[in-house]
Amino acid sequence: MAPEPLLRDLVGRILRRARTAQRRTLSDVADEARVSTAYLSEVERGRKEASSEVLAAVCAALGMRLADLVERAWADLALATARNEREDRLRVLSSGARRGRAGFAVPERDGTEGLSRLPGRRTARGTGSASDAVLLAA
Image: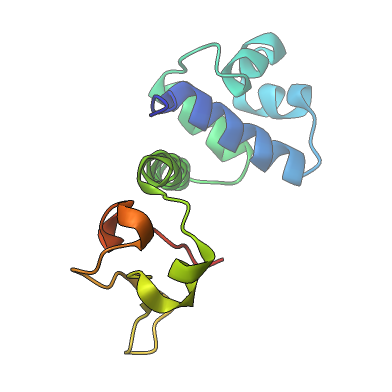
């Protein structure tokens, strides 16, 4: 299993995505946040751990709240964790298993887009239980 990403890497990517989405330069945002361009560049690349004061200033310069940054970082971390867990559990199933002999995930009956697993059924050729197979909706 791959290690979880560092918070400074997640934060840096989020700040860079926000800045580039606004088509702003490093120096523009750094000037408004009152930090050096080199320091902001290091933060965006995940090389520096910025203080909460610096993060709040950069967020303000980008027109976002610190809470927005934390929320996006949590979401990115949750996705990375899910990706790692899925890689550990995913099994390659035979075409016979895809035709229904295995316990594939199915859409929820209440109309949601979520998926649930069919418990207690074995997958093809003893590759593990159906709870080991994870299907994600795009």
